Image (cartoon, rainbow, N blue to C red; front, side, top):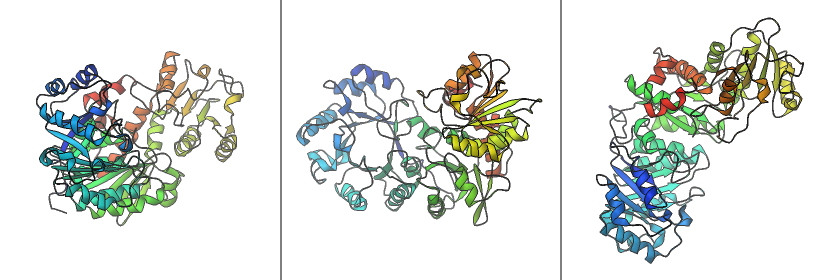
Length: 505
């Protein structure tokens, strides 16, 4: 590792869009941030012959890349190599700076006869990581194209690490090795720091052009792609599904603002058994792991691997010598959110995973009469029995009160319901009303359905974003040894990220 650490400053960040019409192209052009210097237009998405000079005029001051992605590589183009060449050549004639040429179209040798200095030679595998990935990278480079781009879809963190190691070993200023899908997220975020020449993010955050693609502004602002920032170590977000998480924006913003040279990275683990391989790789590559946030579904596994007295699930790992120690900052956040019970107060806990286990013990410590309702009744009974509570089947809760006939004072949703826009309420709406406190672990911009319904019915609600910021602040302090508060972390967020959550605060 160079003494000054690693940086992604030299990577060219490309904002990608796949408009279907000229009007849609104009709309996405209006989204372009002046800090982004390159744009990819996916011509295979057009429902009509694209007006290439007009498209060029929409992006007058950026490097413009034309792409015709075939169906076999994840796009919509069904035509021949000859028709692809005609369209790409016309794009160059219209003033586009670069064109993307799939190596498979002509064997990877001639770039369809287009000028090599204006080509990006590419290969995409939407289904996995090919066994001959090294040879394919060499083939792309051998075309002589200005840039070579290899994108695969890892099925595990270990496969993502293999892609990143290939990137690190071939950081020649031309090759970019990227990942697709949930497991490919680590490669998307980290490849620029290991020498990727190009990085692709969606121009419209709501319309990625590849599975698992990050927004271009997230790559720019959170992961510092294409701009100055130095890292000498890393912290991780380790979970099964991490693409929805706001934690990287919270942590990276605070770390950079405070001049702490740590890069916070998302890692989607196929199993917690991949933990050691991830840590070893980052240590080897010059970003030694200083700590980690652990999320669904690995909190219990982390507690078993790195025990914390009194905790069955942990959400925080901190480097200690050659290993890690664990903590549970979810508990701290929940203790701040849930007041002590008055005599006879009852609480309903929805869920039975790692967050639910922590919430159950907090409710018990706050002296609530606890009822637990999970998808599987036998799990509800087991968790309730361990904590001296009662199991409540959701079908037996009448929507106005607990199974005993008494109203709940607190309802805690520790299920994932609410993460997605189309998720239903995790409980009957009749449980929500004045005098009820709702604590919702999931979070979404604008609030989950549960938070919105609770407030509409007069209930008090602590939303998942508030919980996230509170527990993240405790983690940040543990990772760095510096004091941090929830407001410290949220104040470091870009306004475009912070504002959508302030409506639920």
